[in-house]
Amino acid sequence: MTRQNNNLIIAPSLLAANFARLGEELAAVEAAGADWLHLDVMDGHFVPNITFGPLVVKALRPLTNMPLDVHLMIAPADPYLAAFAQAGADHISVHPESGPHLHRTLQAIRGLGKKAGVVLNPATPVDSIAHVLDLADLIMVMTVNPGFGGQAFIASQLTKIAALRRMIDETGRDIVLQIDGGITAQTAPAVLAAGATCLIAGTAVFAAPDYAAAITAIRDAAAAADAG
Ligand code: DX5
Ligand code: ZN
Image (cartoon, rainbow, N blue to C red):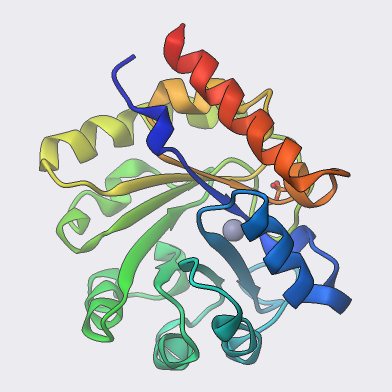
């Protein structure tokens, strides 16, 4: 393996945190070694669950310097991009299925001065983003169906991750390849071997008794995969 796992980005998903104590939970994962904070926005329409909107992003923004990695599971997404940007999101990622004009949506995110991401559901083919790679700063592969934390990792996505790794390498650009869903110290090695550079973990971090130990376990598993 040639990828440098000491550069691995760990982004805990606040979805699995205690929502009565979001500020404390953020501080706790930051102190535990998180690199980014992943924020799952759901509308009960694009996905069968509802979470939170820009107000929560805005409330969290002054509490941390960690990049806020906002994952929009809403349709349409375009009318809300400016609100999330103004709330303090650093990255805004959308699903191609959330609107008819993905290219325009990514341009709009970039136009707001934010990093633009595209998220592929388990059934969404890599070809769906082949012609927008120049507008993508991040690509996220869902290894569960979006909507809920705590689901089982879908291993069939490993070939998709590897295919995206090759596509990204061909661009010569440093697009972040994120994996979201079912990430644990057990599933992390295969994901890293396939070429991921950022792991999103909800349950594996926030349901653990010791957040630092949980994050370290994922990093160590990734490092072991790299050495192997
Ligand atoms: C699911 C979300 C994920 C979720 C991951 O729709 O996009 O970010 O929080 O949770 P775990 O790590 O528990 O699978
Ligand atoms: Zn997510």
